Length: 264
Image (cartoon, one colour):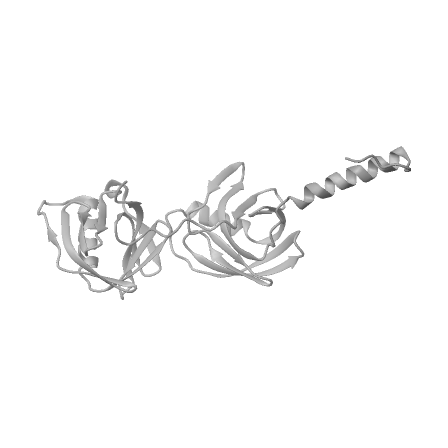
């Protein structure tokens, strides 16, 4: 750095420090505007960290927010105080019984009232008066798993607005894969099955199921009978969010499943 001649030593030092600070700021990424789409990563509350389901997010506007607690959707009114704080008044939300209900309840409890904002590159943290936090990122979420070539493990049974977890003694036993050529195969929870599946836009229709013929009792048998009826009921609406699949019949019955690539 050049010597600043003809200036008092103290003033020259102050100018030099200011120049260095300015050059450092120029290389930093600008802090994000709170308004935008944010994927929720985790909550901290009561001395615990709760990791978010893939679907948890907040779409923050100037005077409203919409989002997903992880399973249930919600709306809220928002009043922004510049980029330092916001006040949230919860609005409507869906009321499905969800697998990760503890996270859902905690998120709903924290995302209300006055929240201070801490910004970082590609990050936003909302803090409540008691120090609990909602950590979010603007990084794009992982892409949705493909319907085909993914092994889907059934983890919930849908009946209208209610989603019930698969009974513990049957958990992980019902799974299926749709091949790119339309062949479907897997387990109904007890017996293995195969069928043809035709995908047409947002619907998938399973043809007649060919199954093994073991006698199935208890929870596994109940899950199998439910899935057999569902897959044979006609066109099912399918929806994938991240690694989560929902198949729903016109009468509101359906299933939820977690995905892993067939290679895994």
